[in-house]
Length: 344
Image (cartoon, rainbow, N blue to C red; front, side):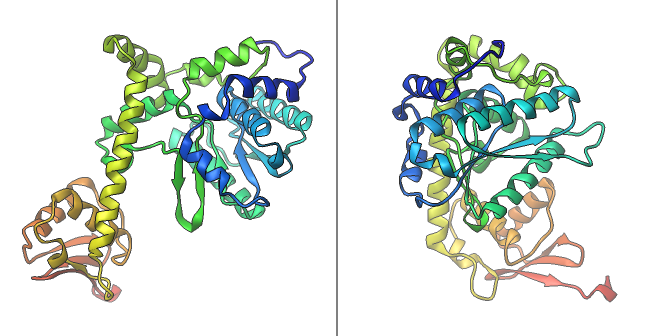
């Protein structure tokens, strides 16, 4: 990492924008940005690492009309002591020089041995609160091409379907109109790092990224380099192409399911509308029903597969989908039965 000297951050941002013109950014994100209301704040996740630093500088340089409405968000997980505090100070200095509004959050009740999921959830709670506070819908994230391959390898190990394998999406629409934006997904990590270094820019390194405590770190350190070398081709580019194709297929299944409208006004899942349809589509309909009208708890994978098997053959039976709740399969519908608490 280059040493921090006297840095003209606005000039550096302009130089970086020359190395990464708008044409290098994701087209779907660019289209979203062009249609974004002029007065809406853009919130940027800013850890101080190379990726998030490049993202902030590129947004500042490519959208000068948005500078007064950029807000950088930094979250201190309090897991790395003095190094984490130094990250926070670095981010504050960069934002002050650029004239970008800056907000820092702290994980006040961080456990000593926090899991990757716990840290991510704490950070997301901070982001959600800041989005509500700013009355904003957009959160910009610095994920890049290496993150695509890492995420795909992680989710393959977990047995994810298309929705999971299509992540991280350049434009990710969430509940309530929220959207996560990732414009750097077509750019390799090494290119970002090399360009920052050539420009003489410092960034912050999280030393834990080189360790093996977290699954993603092990994939990044041990698996991804060996996988790319064994492929003897552009493995990262291939992963990015696969992610786009899977996202297209995922969207097609969603559109097909929407046309079928299998959940009727009563909240039941119509088996007639799903009759003869591929298992993948019935799977999606069942998940949608469980997450919505059924109000079910999280089913284990074996429990969900057993329910799906019976739905596919319209076997008249029922399955537990939570405390006091059952999915009952009839001749034409899957309905949610609830048992009164005193009878449980």
